[in-house]
View 1 (tube, rainbow, N blue to C red):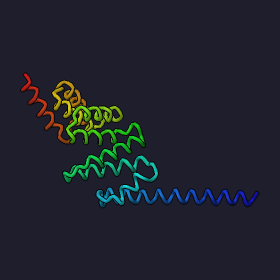
View 2: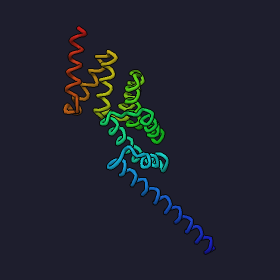
View 3: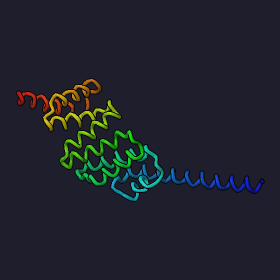
View 4: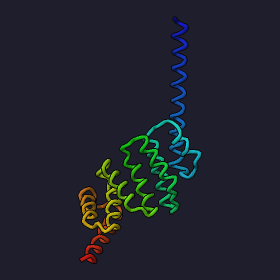
Length: 179
């Protein structure tokens, strides 16, 4: 009986050590992606192929998205993969839907982009960046009243949102031109 207990204890201990070491390695890779090199697949891929830890997936996905946007090097195949991984990990992943929104917009699929943006807003209704995306997409589709409703929500939540004033000016100009 004591031998069986020891075998079980050692097996459990080895399992805990194994999982703990995987978690430490994943956290180390998250730091490497966010702070050092978002382009290095040796750091990002293990995160997506390892423990299904949503927060790590989201942080890395956002870091890679921001890097690609800032460097005008958007890779939609990569971003769609990350977006789907986020949604697979959490079906209510607003960030996953937002990544899919951005790619659909880049690929010239405004209706698909709007659908994804609305899903992102459904799960994070106070995120002004998602609201901004929905407003712009609606303006591009000439849904000016719907665009205005999103702009009004942004104004209520945070009128200092980046580019809000610029987008509001574009909206007002289009509204004038429509009359």
